[in-house]
Amino acid sequence: MSFPMKKSRVYFIPVSETDKSEVIAKKLRNLLSESRILNFLSRGQRAAVKMHFGEEGNTGFVKPEYVLAVCNAILDKGAKAFLSDTNTLYKGRRTNSRDHLALAAEHGFTKERIGVDIIIPDDAKKENTIDIPINQKFIRTASLVRLFVDADAIVAINHFKGHMMTGFGGALKNLGMGCASRVGKLMEHSGISPIVYEQKCVGCGECVKVCPVKAISLKNNKSVIDGLKCIGCATCIAVCPYAAIDVNWASGGSTMAEKMIEYALAVMRGKKDKVAFLNFAVKITKECDCLAKDDPRVSPDIGILASLDPVSIDKASFDLVIKACGRDIFKELHPHRDSARQLSYAQELGLGNLDYELITLA
Image 1 (cartoon, helix red, strand yellow):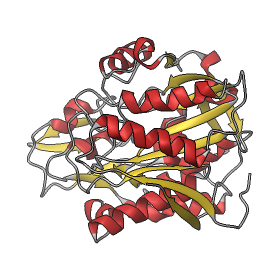
Image 2 (tube, rainbow, N blue to C red):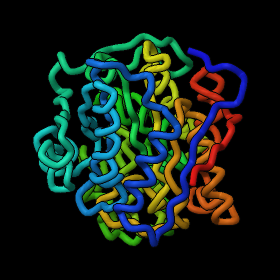
Image 3 (cartoon, rainbow, N blue to C red):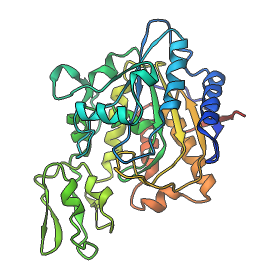
C-alpha cells in the first residue's frame, strides 16, 4: 500500500473544555459531513468501528454519544456498522470477552444506546484469529483478530493521548496494537522486559498486584522482575507511582513502536481506500485509556480530526497539541520515548504521509 506524495487532507474542528456534549456531537456531525471521509462506504458493506471502551475507572475514552453520531453517519450510507475491540494482555476487566463486554455496557456502549452490535471476539478460539504474512523487519507474520480482516471497511475512532511505551497513541496505535490478537500483542511487546531502579523503589507492591503472569515479587522491600516470566505488557511501568520501573532502551526497547507499525501495516493490507480515521484530541492524558483510573488532562482540549491517512492525522494531532501546550508535552511526560518514530516508520512502510493539509472547519 502506498499513498501519493501530495499532502494528505486532515479536517479539523476545534473543541473546548467548556463545550457541552451536545455541542461537541453537533460539531462532530458537521465534521463528518464536510470532510466526506465516509463517502467510500456503500450499501450493504460491513464497517467495523474500532473502539477502545476504556478500562474500569477510566473516563478518557471517546463517549457513547459521539460514537452514536459516527454510527448514524455510517448507517446513513446504507452500510452496516458494529463496534469492536480486542482483549488485553494486562490484568483488568478487558482481559476476556465476557468481562470486556460487561464493562463496555457499563460505559454506555450497548446496542440499545448506539443502535449497532458490540462484538468483542474471544481470541482464545482459533477461528477468531488470522495470520497475515507481511515479512517485515521484526514481524514476519502478524496475528490479528479476524473480524477486522473480514470487515469490508474499518472506521477507527481514536482517543489521542500520551502512552507509556510509544510517547503518544492515536490512529496508528489503535490499528497496530488494537487489532492484534493477544498472541499478536505479545509479539509486539516481546523482548521488552522492564527493569527496576532500586533507588526509586519503595516496595509499595503496586506492580506486584497488576502483573498478569506473576513475574514481579518483593525482595528486601524492593520489586524484582523475573525476565523469564515477563511478557512485556508494561502495565507495571504505568502503575508505578514513583517511576521506579522502565524499559532498558539501550537493549532495544525502542523497537516496540516499529513492531506496532508493522502490525498496522498488516491491518491495512487489503483495505486500500477502505479505512477512515477520527482522532479525538480531547481530555488528553499522560497514559492510555487502559490505565484503570481517571487520568487528568495534561493539555488543553484541541478538537476532533478526520482523515483517510493515519500518519497525517496523528502528525496533525501531535502538532496541534504541541502548539497548544507551547512545548513537546509528550517528550516531557515520557522523556525516553521517541514519539516521532512511529510516524516516520509508518511513512517508510507506505501507510501514509507526514505532509498534510489541515482544513479547519467552523
